[in-house]
Amino acid sequence: MFEYVAVLTSIILGLAITHLLQGTARLIQDPEAGRPYWVHLVWVLYMFLLSVFWWWWEFRLKHLAVWSFPVYVFVILFAVALYLLCAMLYPARLDRYEGFRDYFYSRRAWFFGLFMLFMLIDVGDSLLKGGAYFASLGPEYIVTRAVKLVLCVVAIRTENEAFHGAFAVANVVQQLSWALRFYDTVG
Image (cartoon, rainbow, N blue to C red; front, side):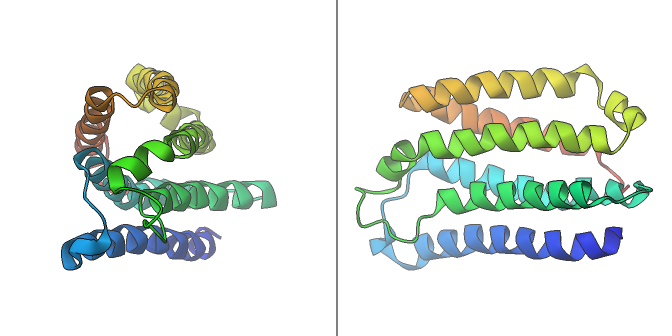
């Protein structure tokens, strides 16, 4: 069953990564595509890393003995949440905005609201992988999720560039650190 679910989630994940890469290529190829904004680009990098790592982390689901329909839907929705986060970073049309800075801040409630949902689903996903697995993540896992949830609420309420830049950079650093320390092998 895992292979069956992995195919569908891989398609959704592939669309997410494609969306990020196409948006970034459009920025490089077409100066008229919109004025780049560094905070937006750091979030693009973070979402790319998160998307690539997500597949690696989900491989642990191969150990799940029983796949029910609710579990199947849950894992699919987890992939969909990731896709939507990636899709939020590059709009189909940017002509209604003065550039990516304006777009990013005008859509921050959606982006950070989806990010909060994604993190809550991630906790459920970690629990789904078993109590021993969840415990192996240690207190850092819960603390970082709680802190990120609070910071997402702040991000929804403020346009402060220093805050948003620090939040984006901190997520990239934390994501790389987490992946290198906890996921050096598949499964």
